[in-house]
Image (cartoon, rainbow, N blue to C red; front, side, top):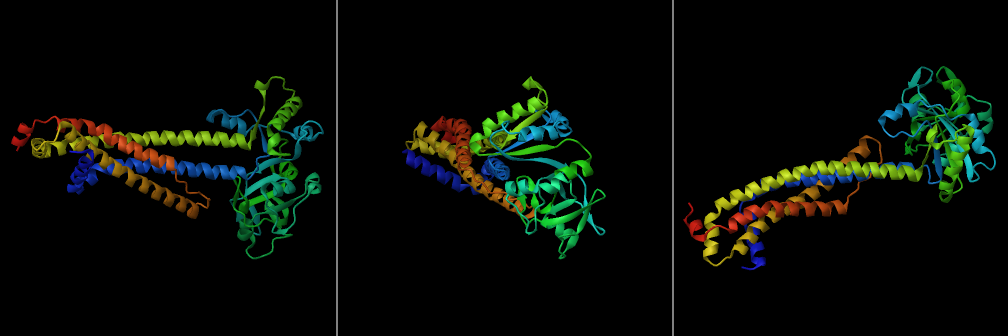
Length: 415
């Protein structure tokens, strides 16, 4: 009996009891489906986040107050840190301190609502910043109206540029230019409206309200510090050098001689990309490893069914041996049956995993308003097929050996 004939016989054995075969591979299908989904969703999330980060540009550097959080317990200290102040902005802009600096923008986040004549918009992102820097960084210029300028920033003017969704909620079809909205009991004149842009680099432009950072700092928040400083340098090639210049400049401004005592930290786009890729990759591997336990359970189920099959087909084994089949032939036949079962389960699992991952991406994109990309990993598909085949091989060996060692005389007598 050749190997080719053993494989053909194994296929016939699987086909002869379709219901049992389907139930046997169910665990494999579920396990592989889950693994493919985890990897696909993880890569989709990574692509989405990295796409948002890239919206800032590779030449962007962000300076944040407080010590860089190394865990959840450090997050509150960072959120309430107040170490970035006007003197730091002046020092960074001073000629020679950061030679490759092109421009910078202090940023403040203002909690609250926006209202107009009794109508209130409760979900705005109120940002204190610089309009020209904002427009160039996010490549979003007013659809109607204009940007406020440096003069407005110096004078702490009560002017604002609003997103498309804010206009629809508060004004409907009315032209909002020149109208005054209320933020924290203070009137702001609308000078521009952003176009329908959607999500850009973690910000939804459509529900943004942008005001001068000096106005936000003095009148809306009443603080003397900034939540972050966004810096643009000449090119991505000078980012590393500029980071060293920024660190030196702010340490001098804060009279810090020991880097271990820094009360600020710096994020670059490449640094964020690396961190996020590592975090999501680790999380995906962990979840896939947890799901892989299901494959071990499924493998035990395959072994159990194969043992039952060996017992039921004892007379068949005796007859084959009596007709000249060797121990190796019987071993191959039952081992191939196990591998075929789990291999089919792996193929079905890969197809189901890809299908469900695609449906999830469509649902998130449609109902959550995120541009969630569908990502199919051929590496994960290959791994799933390999693992499912390996499960069949490992958990099929014992039943196959048990079948091959049966005595043909005793097997033929079996009732």
